[in-house]
Amino acid sequence: MDAGKESVMLRAMGRAAASVFKTALIAAALSLAAPAGSGWAQQPVQDTGMSIAVVDVQGALRNSDAAKEIQSRINERRQAYQRQVTEEEKALRASEQDLQQERSTLEPEIYQQQLRAFRNRVADVQKSVQERRRALDQAFSTAMNLVRNELVSVIAEIADERGAKVVLFKDHIVIAEKSLDISDEALRRLNARLPSVPVELPPLD
Image (tube, rainbow, N blue to C red; front, side):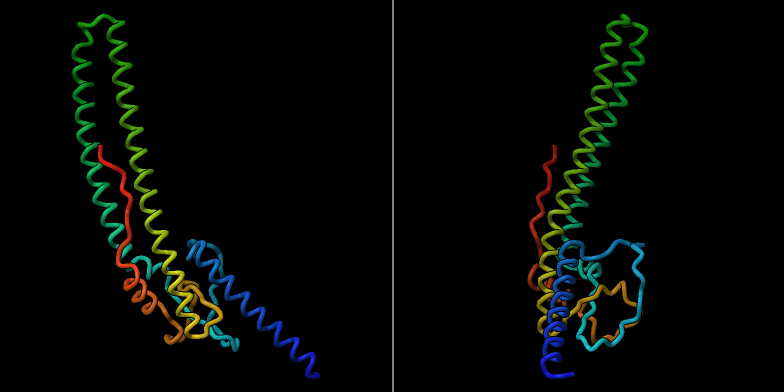
């Protein structure tokens, strides 16, 4: 092969490697982990002559200080909501019993009015429970997105320092050298940079 053709091929290989690296980072930023059972075949990491790194994204997220704090605050608010719901359910049961006891003494029209009012109260409580659940889910997702974004930045930084052109998800790898695993370093840097994040919790009624 002459020098001109070899130079063209080397430049093409460089562009392909850069494209793979960018694609890997974009995929990490969007999802950070493929869902279980996605059908991706697990294959041993082979030497392709290209520097790679392996990271346990879900493990880093799960064990990060910020994520633990987020989960703790969400759980606390959920428990507070549950206490409120329990009291509301008690009040509804008491109202239902009163209505049943008074049924024989009420005019049919009055009874139907009170029954409709009771059912409206039940519907309002159910709607409130659903709204609280959605609000908590949204608060959790918003806060965790901040953690994910910072983790992507940390992974990209470590990959750049190591000259890694490709970063692979650890749960997609069967066998890999321990030296390729940047999970511990990624978690350490993530905790140092983002020990906590704000959690916009919905208010208690």
